[in-house]
Length: 218
Length: 218
DNA sequence: TAAAATTTTAAACAAATGTTTAAAACAAAA
DNA sequence: TTTTGTTTTAAACATTTGTTTAAAATTTTA
Image (cartoon, rainbow over all chains, first blue to last red; front, side):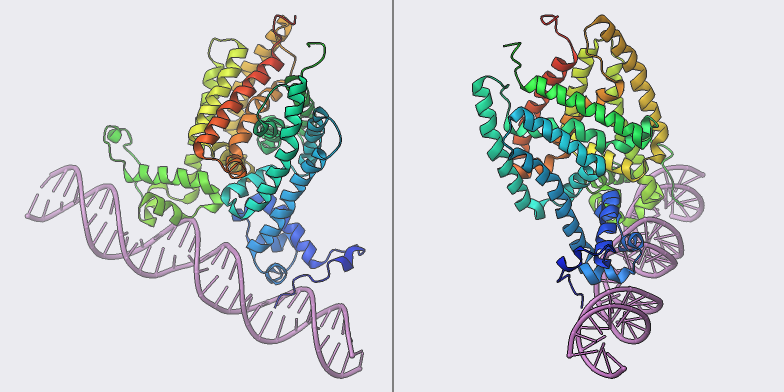
């Protein structure tokens, strides 16, 4: 019978990864690249340099391993966002920070959003609770904040639901289409990052200029 | 031996689809929904209400059928764009038309972009020639047009490569995340379309206001 | 150290996968 | 009608898939 990790905390200090960790990390990278359906148990074992049986020994099934990884990645993406919304700063600053944070995450994990979107489309039902949590937190913070700014006359009126797609969309698109872009422009990883960085700044400009009514115009 | 369609033109007039067409259409819808790896030959056969052997009889292999469909869908998405760029209208009008056309395509095939992105990431090499064609046509038209407007002082200076992600990004994001959005807001197909329509208009506003220097400000 | 528990292994399992076969059903041509 | 060519079928094929087994290797405990 598989011994499903009872004492995770114990090996925090040690440098060498446990087999369980090795498998999970390898699986994460393969899943991100090939998606759930495109990944075989043997792909994972090979990437982790481990015996095939160990995947099931530690995680019971490919599906269970996947869900665990998916939740991690989904949280990674969301928590970032939620933390920023809780900061005591202006909405304008929040949105800018959001774009910047998003950019940073995408830089280290460019395949993340495409992966999340694909797998949510494949079967989003098992994620409903997490999605709802995200929505409530988002809307709780956002809607009031927007109304306030609008009534102060410092912000253009816009539906709450449009804010996030607006902010994330054109930045994400660059990373979702990273491979396409790199192939089309025949450019290196570094050149791509430079392009993305510049694109990020354009987006920040565009969005803040559009959403927030500057004093000189008033 | 499989008889690979010799006389396509002949049955243009007839109403009932040929088996070959039935299979291709069914395959398209399944591939769009589940992706290449997530789709089995039996999924396709079932969706087309045909015997499993017929897929290979008409298309030789799952891979060949897929490539054929992929190229169709890729063209569907690109030709739209290219046609607009060839119109004798201002850049501003072109970008607006582009967003509108894009919106229309996404409305009928919401899974299209996510599908294309995923499959390009999986293996974009076989598409290099098509990508290059797209790039050249795009840049040929765009770069000169932008320079012209910038030197006239009617447009903000922006790298050519940033234009398309800017335009498509925040619109695509809404459709790429359609399932997520619908689940988060617990809304119907119709409500989603209404939201998307409104979002499209916001984007048109934002982008044209940002990119083009209006006369009153000059 | 010896015993017990845990981890790793090679091999096998049944089920699912893409594909092929060879015969049957059907349509077109003679 | 008979012959020829095409389309469809059920069944089988060899691989690959996720998973399990039972024994070996290793580590932990007593």
